Length: 126
Image (cartoon, rainbow, N blue to C red):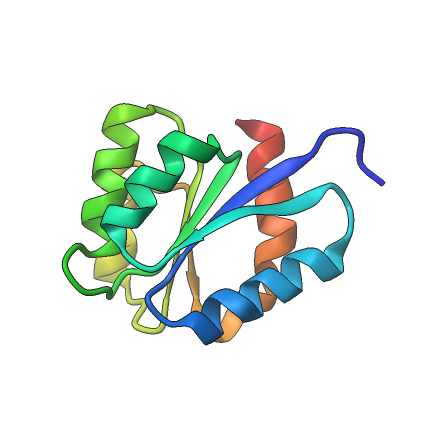
């Protein structure tokens, strides 16, 4: 077991995706915990302020505020905050735009199983 707890904020408008991410993170059982969840970008901003997560996993396509919009605000408020953009529609253009605003990593939803290890790596380097 890791000595430092790594807390993740999960942001996705689909409850089943948040549940799947939570289960994968909890199954890793190596210092990873889910600090909280949010269903959209506005909730993510509130949760970030309340929970102070080590890392944030955020979907791109959500109602009201996209993941990219929320991530830009988060990074402006907390420069260096590790964020993973997890989306079903990942392409080179989105990856380039995400990198340009400071998102640490982009993951296609079909590759979500890589997220627990990715979160630990990001928290270590933050």
